[in-house]
Amino acid sequence: MAAPLLRSALCTERSLTSPELVAWAARIRRAWDHSGSGVPVYVHRKLWEWLYIIEALAERDLLRPGCRGLGFGVGQDPLAALFASRGCEVVATDVSGAQAAQDGWIDSGQHASEADQLNQFGVCDPDRFAELVRFREVDMRHVPDDLRGFDFTWSACAFEHLGSLAAGQEFVLRQMDCLRPGGFAVHTTEFNVASNRSTEGTGQTVLYRRRDIVRLAEQLRRLGHRVDLDFSAGTDPADTHVDEEPWTDTHLKVRFHGFVTTSLALIVEKDPSGRSHPWQPDRRWRAHRAAERLRFGAERRLHRLADRAAHSGSRPAT
Ligand SMILES: C[S@@+](CC[C@H](N)C(=O)[O-])C[C@H]1O[C@@H](n2cnc3c(N)ncnc32)[C@H](O)[C@@H]1O
Image (tube, rainbow, N blue to C red; front, side, top):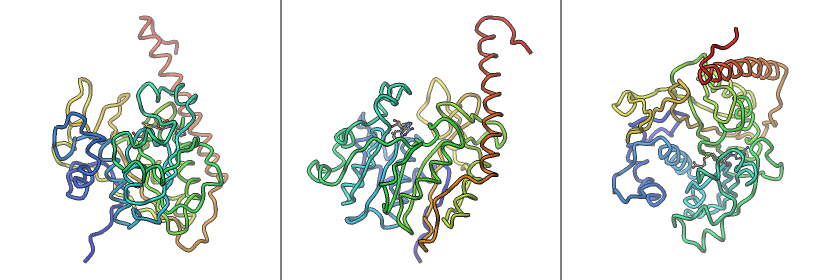
């Protein structure tokens, strides 16, 4: 009997150290094992995100000649190169250099402005890469409508950086239009494992709560798409460690702005019937978006006041 396919899930030690993911880690070793340690994997959620995306697509037989993939916010991740090495045609995209510089992605070496940066670790034969990979500037908040008919889309650690919880959710809903019926979207993001109530809801990095992902899945299903969620956070030693500064080598769960976060991979199959329609915000969604904007806007202002007070030694006005 065939093994069950990967579902939308959280980063766990068991998943990261599974034989399938470890095999992909070896395949892209030059992109992450910079010290040549030779360990099977780093216990790091970022590596898990890349490996999980690769395996989710590979087991669905999408990493082969003839398949077309579209990547968002690719930064300098090795996925475009890996997919091209398997014969896929790839359109790799990232936001404009000016916007990336403003948001600090260039300083942190996590932005791409040309295709060659995407094969800097030699994951793909250079001629094959040049033949199969195209780079394009795309803002995930405004996906151009000529990007259509792809067999798969992906992004790693990107849609939580669009300014608000709703902006990332709307990206996921809209990029489904880029897929052919039956195509797959695989996107990783930040997941708040500490709370299903309070979170970082606006700003440069937002943290999705379980309720946000459930709401997103409801919208996807309403359009006829298929998504299956598993929120198990793992019980192995690396799953129970929450990393914080000074950082350790175990980095699956991280303390961020007072919350505990890990990575979530979302796997969505586009309605295979070909009958799905592009997503449009309905009245309920618009009301929900407005309510969140108010709530998180107010929380942000309070945090800023508290911060200012802490630094000036005075107390915030109440
Ligand atoms: C944390 S980095 C991740 C990069 C890469 N995917 C990886 O896994 O290493 C976030 C990426 O999202 C991109 N990004 C941020 N805002 C974006 C936007 N509005 N549209 C497209 N990409 C964006 C950044 O330029 C950067 O490449």
